[in-house]
Length: 271
Length: 315
Image (cartoon, rainbow over all chains, first blue to last red):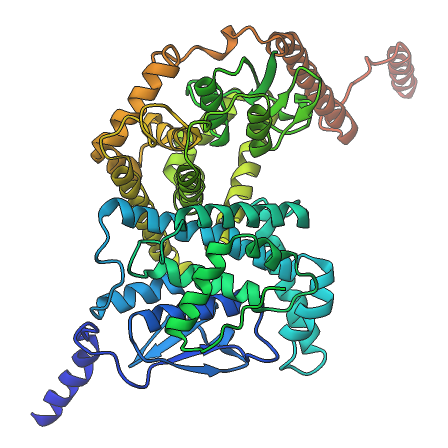
């Protein structure tokens, strides 16, 4: 009789859905990314910073852990990903949904039209800024040779470091071709970045955040990308120069850095 | 100044399937640019080898769609002239939204969804294209689109495909709802005059609304958003009054390349049949299935007579 009950519990208990919304945000939530000093690349650093900024804005504690194989640990293959309780969620979009399910949201105060605009601008950043970063990292020969290959393969021994770097480069180039960026020159890409920054600057205007007083996930995303572009040393500074043309975007980055990352003085330098 | 645009012809459907072409045409109609549209079926006949292609009055050929719009703007046909800086930024943002969320699903609906592809898309292209392109070109385009979609959406395992499809359609429905919320009760996205964003949105929505698809999950959702449907019908009635009403049969369009192809087509077909028959006859003769027999020679009766004489002698 007892055995029967045990069997029934064993079979049916795993099928009982665990409500994630009921669990509060734990203290030991961790965010995984690649090694900060030697390995992480521009686009991944931007994504990771965006998630960190978002969680800071929601007042949720998170610990950043660096692992060389973070990309392979992630459920979708992209970094960063967070480990909360017994859930693993990757990329900003799903993380925002997950956090919302736990009862924390930055965009609740927006009306329908503003929500539509927020989603549209987030797609703009993903479409233009992120793609431009990927292009610069993987399709610009100077950057690939001097920075990307060395950094991407740094945790692995020879010949694995070269093989993995070439494999990733081939994958990214295929994707660029599929979305029509395969034939673009660096100048055209920089022009697109300029257009994107101009649009963001015009939308921000003189407001402190994109939707006036309160930051939203859009602010986190824009901060992540712009801050990384401004503070990362590349082979040429043309990308950061394009961003520096817009003073309200610089002020926006400084403001978020000082408010949410508690730094006394900004690391953004104007050269 | 007269411009020339070459676009692919699509038989019974009034709208060509490439999504950029209606948006180019619409943009031109909004701005009043004097555009002459040439419909051709063979992409290799275009001056740049790809479609669409714009030939300007200076003889220059431009084939990248956004460059075509930039050229039109330089020639002072600018639909966004009256927009404020912020509205211009919103245009860019919403175009990115359409490209990221709606375009993959439209590609999936027309090219990957088995029922739609076989009954609608492939039929359109096969009917419009000349022989023998209609046999392999649609299949090749389908493979290209499938590869593109896989790269766009990332690698996934076969068993996750249904889930991925559900997620894609969910995002597309959300995108349509967002567009509807942004449009509200206005006539166009930025007030009373159409802008380039209206051209892009219209091209996506009109295609979805007008095509008669056997499995139209997204179509059903679009029909539920009444302000978007009214918006499409309004633009159609204002800027495309005759094309919305009937579908002119392709052979009646006065495109010279089309009529020149007819006699060649017939000649090609006859030659192909003759060549086939000759090949079959030659193979049959050489392999002995069919052999030509010669008639028997005159010496045979003489030999017979000798044989009879010998028998007589023996008797």
